[in-house]
View 1 (cartoon, rainbow, N blue to C red):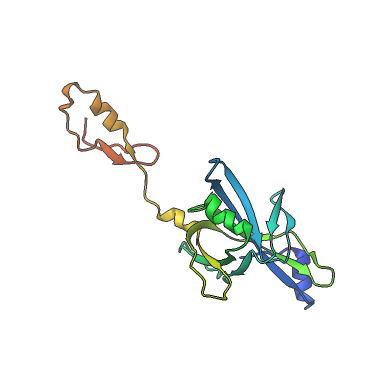
View 2 (cartoon, rainbow, N blue to C red):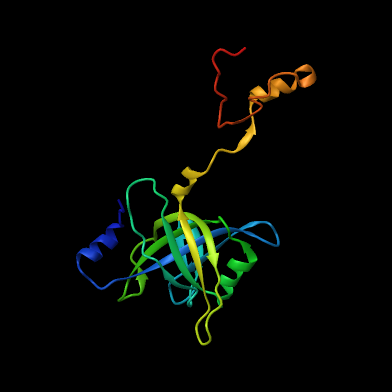
Length: 203
């Protein structure tokens, strides 16, 4: 269940005019340096800084993010997907797509509420989505249309669908030390996570 800041809740309860914006935060590897760098894009009109989790984050606007699909909340462990439409001519988006290795890059989406009368945030942005970049589609626009890229995101629930990493078990290491390698190699490679289970009846 989403819990809003008291200032936002009070503003909504009073039925006052309100506007909200969405913030996209990506952590991806720079293709040139190999370092993991961060970039923020949002649906606002200009660049703006926000304090999130105690750190100052800069989000680039001016049409960088054209649209973020509505987020549907539901209980359970189903993998949710989300589509973000961004301007392909924005220099920040160009860097994200071509300068970074954004495939499977971690992503967070926050929402921030503003008071239209002052144009100031009512509270700190709150997170509404966490996951990874699943696909990036950069189609060629028709003549006269704005170039736009589509970024497909997958929620954190996808982590539960990943298979275990294949690695050698303790049993295989024992077998390798046997002279001549004549021992049974049936258990030489086993999918393990943590401690290796005991196989009853074996010596």
